[in-house]
Image 1 (tube, rainbow, N blue to C red):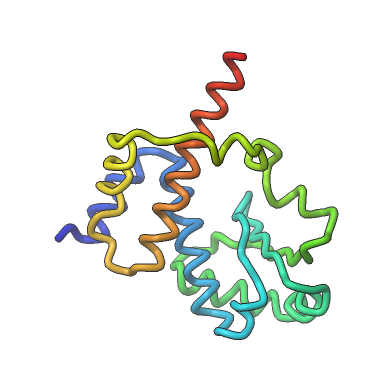
Image 2: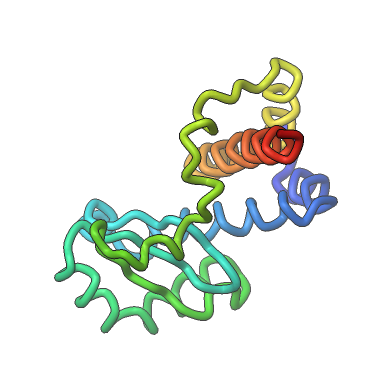
Length: 160
């Protein structure tokens, strides 16, 4: 079985993969840091420029968690092993600011229609092989698949 360090070094050749891994680690740390009840009422969406965007089920959760954000941020950075999260922004589902969370390209309904080849899926499986922490492995695989689909979609829209 491959060691996590070997997998990380192989993936670090690309900044996208490096960011995807860090994002997956932050999302995993979120779940372990905030506990079950908070986890069930929140959903980390994106890590962008050191800002962790988290969707909440209602405005009360956003308000309460904002008061705890410094402590949560510190614990996440400790868990990840680096000061990658500088700020946490809590957004309620109906918040118009949510457009900051996800790039407009990522909202494209065409993205779900893009299929990856068996070879592309095999490459992703090879990248995550050996990662023993199941939640980290799952999130990283999700991010890598989404990244490949998004890149295909971008190439397709540039050609149009």
